[in-house]
Image (cartoon, rainbow, N blue to C red; front, side, top):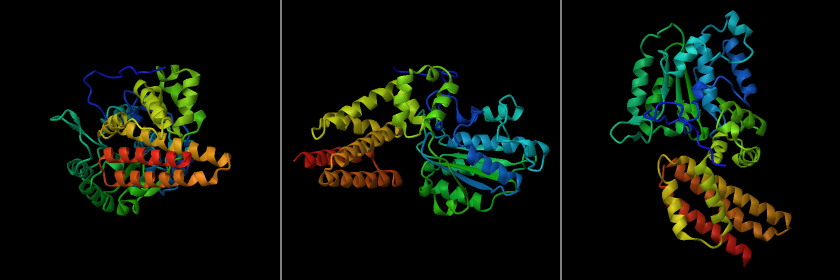
Length: 365
């Protein structure tokens, strides 16, 4: 069943780089699923007066890192005194959605909360490909102004992977010499690739993939159309998603279902390759704003390799494991390099299918 969300805002609304399609933005979420332990650790640290000025909130895409960051930011702005009675009585970082500050944050109108993300390019009518140094400098200027409410000044960066060299170095200078009562919440899908000098100044919060029960609860909380997904379709999506709510939504969406079916067929046909389809796929996933399709390709490839290795191991065919293990390592390394150096994905896709076909032929020979 293909599910298409209904628009939650005006048709001419500017797209947001950190929002999945037209689902609610993480800043609008008042509930947090699956990360109670990490939440309690931060609350305890805050009440003890040990809140660091910078965090890297890391983990795979789609597990709630941004929701966690916005939840912490909301709590700090509502409870600027860790010794207050309200803070002492809190059992988690919850702030009701009808709180005045929650409304301001939801509309990005709070004077002491700043968001760093890829912004909208009015000339091209597309999102910029990265977070520009001008964006960071604007936040730096705001940070050095007086706090509007004598509380915290908070910057949420979503995500670190969108920084370029210049913007990362500009952000580093602000984190190195932060104004008083400043907090930086850096969302990172691959924390190990964050600039080392930034990592060394941040507390690491490593969030784990979501469990099936948590994902089912989130789907229900999102409301229609996601809450109306047939149980079988939701179960299948959860099984394929590796703990990522983002991936579940992609798989329940029309284009996600179509791409998943196409990839499955192409992989099942190996070692035979329809190069026209491969070239078309390479063109599709190489688009800058098509990161979801690129991620889906890698998930499908590694799932296919995992299934091949498992089948051969169960059959006692140890010799057949070597070609698959070699291509697994090669694809992993090539994908890391493509991400690290922002390389064109087209040659990578062509190489992946050539290597997969070679592994399949080696097994069948």
